[in-house]
Image (tube, rainbow, N blue to C red; front, side, top):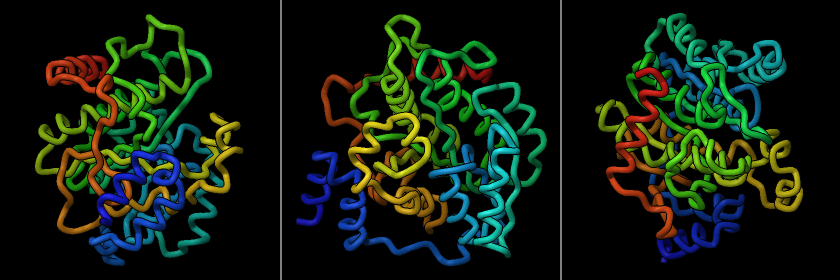
Length: 304
């Protein structure tokens, strides 16, 4: 009965992705919370950590004892977030690192500066430009930020424990694109975002195979109240605001995946601490050959 209700919440979207779904599921989670000191002595790296889900993730990792590197595009703009985190966790260790994840040269420079072993690498940085924009290397910006930069950073840092991509339930609407650089069709910001989140989810099993035994997972946080959502989708945010999850509710599964023992099954797509289907619509399903073709393209585009 619980499993049927859980699946129904996901398929209905609105109840499953809001705070209602989170609070209903939390009552029946079979797995307990990670130990309070689960990440003591370990290093975690969170991209896009200056606000919203990234900042909430950094706070949760610090609560579990990790030394947390907040990777942001503009170090100056992260000063307020850093002050708040240090005020909340006076004994925590936070380091602000400046790196534009969409810029592959910047990613390479950053990786050489981070010398300690990384236990958890959380790929949270996200963008939704209103018009088609290119990265420093000429790649479409959402692809560079959500896929190419993260693949390169993962390869360079060689995380020893967990790699987690923050995806989006919006990926359910999109198939794996045949034009990953979004050159052939009229650009739509929300579509570009969802397409690259589909790429993240589709490539996760292949990355997990490559990095084994390191855990690799993708999760989606549901609909959470963040500055990014308010800016990118103001109408949607206003309409759904009474039902939006808090950032802390949105990152719960990220923290659980980063710290729970034993490690969860690798190569999967998660939401509210449970493996979820990667497709609900037949037209979005891809072949193994298409996944491999996308894998090869993205690795080559990232310089791997």
